Length: 301
Image (cartoon, rainbow, N blue to C red; front, side, top):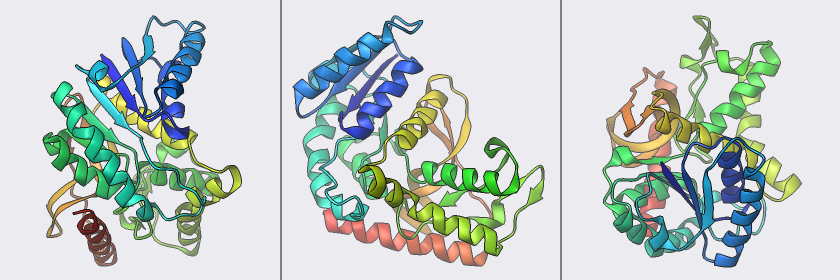
């Protein structure tokens, strides 16, 4: 198993460290526009790896060195600047990075599964499908996975139930139009219907990424472990169900756009996209998300 991480900024480096702590591959390659930065990270991680029960090879390299990768994790991005900058404001500049990198990466690793982390992740996941020529099931955006984890953590603290036992999803756009699928939320067969409490926790969830960025300048650890949960499900063919950004093909009459729905992740990538029965309000919210992301995609072309 060979994993390549493209981009060694705050997020890419955190993912690389998580991959070192939980070595799932024989080789971990770091690629960055500034090769020296990637080389420094690789040396530091190799030193850390010496303290692990692992013989994973960690190195830096160019696109050509990524050939034969099983999994590509794309985190490259222009700097955010202001911590509260909207993700959608990065779209055009980050799309230019995708245009430079993704076709070459896909050429040397034609059978890879691509995990998109760069923002705005939904529009860029759609662009990645087009730029790589990969089948849609092999292009996965991290989408609302971390948003859902944050929401479950808040519910857990409020309800006194472990977050692993709570089935609650944030769906749609990884952005301002995301929504909590209250009609699906449950634990132990008992549903959580919308309440003042759940609405308050959802509002906290939406703002949490911006709050963390304001306080520490960026987010990294949460998205790193969320990304590694996708990698874990791919490597071990676990078939975990996760809310990730995938190509939507007809759900609620929405097509040709990437949004988050619960999807089953296995060795081949997305093995199944679930079609949950949403309330009328949630259906309308999903369609609003589709409109927002579609407008973002249109701005790229």
